[in-house]
Amino acid sequence: MTTQVVKKHMVVAQNASGRNMNVPIYRMKGARPGPTVYIQSSIHGAEVQGNVVIYHLIQRLKDMDICGEIILVPNCNPIGTNIKAGEYTLGRFDPVNGTNWNRGYFFDKEAVKHFAKTVTREESIEGIKQRFRAHLSNAIDNKLAEPWGLGLAQQLNLKLQQMAVNADFVLDLHNGPVSTRHVYIPEYAKDSAKLFNIPHCIFIPNVFAGALDEATFCPWWTLQESIKTNLEREISFNVEAFTLEMGSQEVIDFNEGNIDATSILSYLNAKGVLHECDIKPKEMQRLGVYLKDYKTLFTNWGGMVEYMAKPGQTVKKGEPLAQILNIDDLDTDNGSRTLEAPCDLIPILHFPSASVLSGTQLYKVFTNYKEL
Image (cartoon, rainbow, N blue to C red; front, side):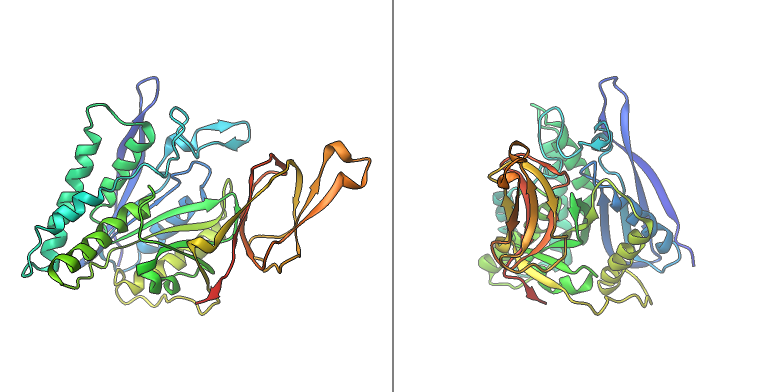
């Protein structure tokens, strides 16, 4: 069987010449009922690998039996993709307002608690979900209609969030600067860590900090907890959202993209999105940390750096992380020194440049990690 791909374009911004900037939206709907999935990539302009992953997903899903609907939005931020400075893409922040492109999504905790008070003991889970999704969609529309206007990043975020609001599973595809694969997983969905073929898992609290995954799962988690408090009724809405970090930014790799597509398909299959599919998670070592143990190593110096510890490598306390060159002391013994690991750790990503200012986030690392 072949699943039809329906492609449309959505206006996400206008440039200074008044011309619309569009993103393609690919929808694939199965003949069978099932969940709704929303997948986007490249909210940060330099993080382009997700586009290759979505390409492979579309090519492979066309020949699969889908249950429900899958919505795929590659290159969801064309503004960020086109902010170049020489060889580099500077698409992490809205250039006009300085806002992180991934921090303008919407969540109103008090409004969710107020909605929870309208839920009755007899109302079905599907009925609650339908009403709550209408509530969320209306809240986003109202935010977009803010009479004082919104910054460019938040306008873009809200338009994307509106497409994701009806999804049961939301995947936001990212990349680190120089990075190994890792995934952010809400603590309540911890069991899903083993459904992806990703070796490094970060468990984040069910707290909103502005990103799409949090904007997706925080409303449903808050609603569940509020209903439990108000009615002493245990409900699971089975809505999950994740940020997947698939290697380094500024590069694409088609072979690696197909590996990541397989990882995502194994998750979707486990969640009932695919019918009679035999793709299952790999047997592999998966290491996890809570967010508090995902540490950032800042520099208190500036210099030129050789990154000796590679992403994904196990490093013991006292072993070298980096070799630092001090240009002002090349004629002395202080011209070079070694930065040692302050504890046992696994580097997950590091700064992309050899030229480092003081106060730079040099490495992000796992500490106190455990095998899942």
